[in-house]
Length: 379
Image 1 (cartoon, rainbow, N blue to C red):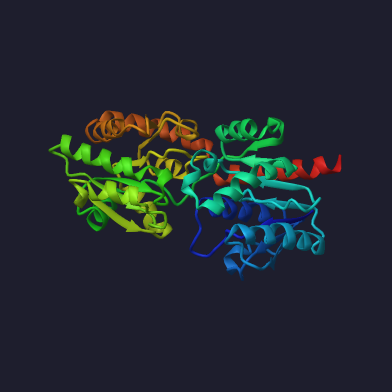
Image 2: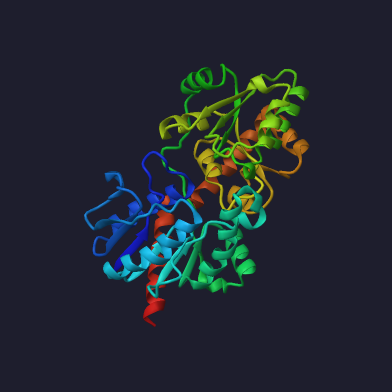
């Protein structure tokens, strides 16, 4: 097969959720199936680290799609031309966007539909594009892959898509995430948390991540736990920092205990997660939630939300809370910090749950979806 792939989110030193899915799955698939040719479509000159093997070629398409108008040009004008020139047998798009102007068999990965529930988190024009085009993408695609059973049901119901057309392909977590020894924990706590135990949040500092309530809950925890000196370490960039998040932070009585690291290298991130008292991941909406599994790989328990995909991914290794309740979040913080037997039980359950998720499994299932997409076009 000649498999053409939308790899516009493979950006050196800027990989995030979908970028990591693309990197981890394709780096495995391309090496495992050398008899097939993979042609990666970039909107800039790619880093050599993304040309995974000899059977990977790359092709640059302009303009860079950074606006809905440019999305339309890139996907519906430039990509059909590229697919024809490159004699594609199949088009794979790991970020949900596809071309409506091609007859080439297409597999798209729609990770979640958060914009349907939190449209105001997106700029007006972007929001309109997503809400108009994603139902069309779902209907047009030969097959759809998604990252949780929750998202599968959501896509099927919202867009009236046959469930048999949708494959569930769980995310994985890097094998670099592993338990941290006590000596390293002391070093990391001194470096990032003023020498104290800490809760950690990892992710984009986005309204959907519910940071405003996490700040309020942490403040409540600090007031009710007089003997605790625990800190809250926030890992991520402030690209989506809003006035609501800023106000919640500014109003904190214990804001001096909240520490921001910005973006961290993978090596540092694994150490910071592995040295934490617990991962706090109380989002309003997630299609998967990779930081949950990253914490599990480090033998770190998790506090996460009881909505969308998070209970499915967390299993029994986490305390589940209502993300709209600062009281529940605060209580969970206090419970984790004071109940060591419970922490150990959660860690034991997390060790079982984490076995369900690996990038090897992701790649294997994505390849099966690729084969199913190609075969259905042949029948």
